[in-house]
Image (tube, rainbow, N blue to C red; front, side, top):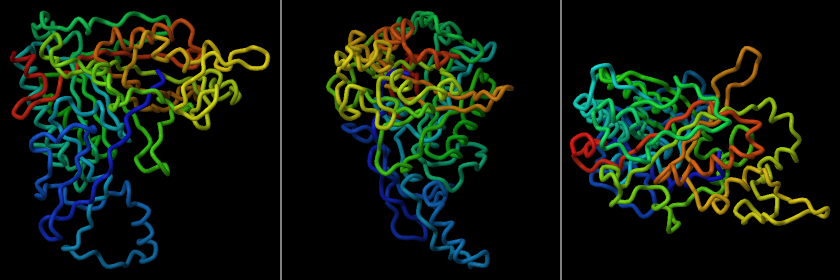
Length: 451
């Protein structure tokens, strides 16, 4: 749970109109990192898909509820030609194609699913290539707010794209299964063991990894179900994890997310505007191997929070564990959330204001040889144990150009003395090579599988 935050969402766009019977349609806004131009075909054509442009409950539920309450159940239905437009939440769209895959620098969505697949017995490189071709075609359609290409379930009918992103990666075992051992990146070597790990092998690693995120739960589920169906006989689901974040617009102004401990989590995340952002997060275009150009490496950890123990701590004790104020995320040494932490400041009795074991102190890049990673996590709650203990915590996902220089040095330091380690447990882990984005006419991973 290194102390970094996700990039802010790009501005929301104008709701689109029904192209057939309403006013002239406007293209749905495309969410993309600042400084990146929209790829070919990113803009909407305005044509009606099977998802008719009706209002989404996520952002308009209160308004619609108020109308229903005032008018009663006998209110006349709306005229067919006056279909309500999508809200900005439903209309927000991320482009599938670009230099990088979606779901890395885009703002974290309200709902997420992480999945790993293993290739089926007998499946190899040919079957893997066909699968990635299917998955890429499906992802492009769904992210544009269109129906799946075959037997669409209708789960997301009437919804817009809702910032849907679908991201694909390859695990260490994928390369031996496909006869591509010679093209496996050195950066994909297994992560070292950490003393605090309590890993469940059945929920770790995998041949293929898929990350799904959307601001609407049904849109996210529809993508999840379609990707699973597309796997067919080529791959079998190994594990699935479901997560969530605060919904866009739930706070008066954009802010760093809070985790299930109630702490502002992620203040020092690298920002796309920083000059070394690309260098830290993405493999360069001239990188080795060549098929990973503009790609990144994702470390995935299921981190359970021992909330019953954490919530017994006093506010001061919680803040000493983290090194920041719980109310606003400011460092204990003073200032605001973004104020540089004063690691040498002491109290009247000579004690350090920010304890040596504080999580925020240990994870600072300047305390780890400059190591940094882009965190893009989801919270999770999977019910309760038999004794009532909540099975809840963080689906930690971090991105870096090289995990040996990003995740590993930070986690090693945390493993040696982080006060937070008493209140968390790492229960699953995975490392995946995520190639760059697919160019027009390509599928994700084509340069690996057909190069």
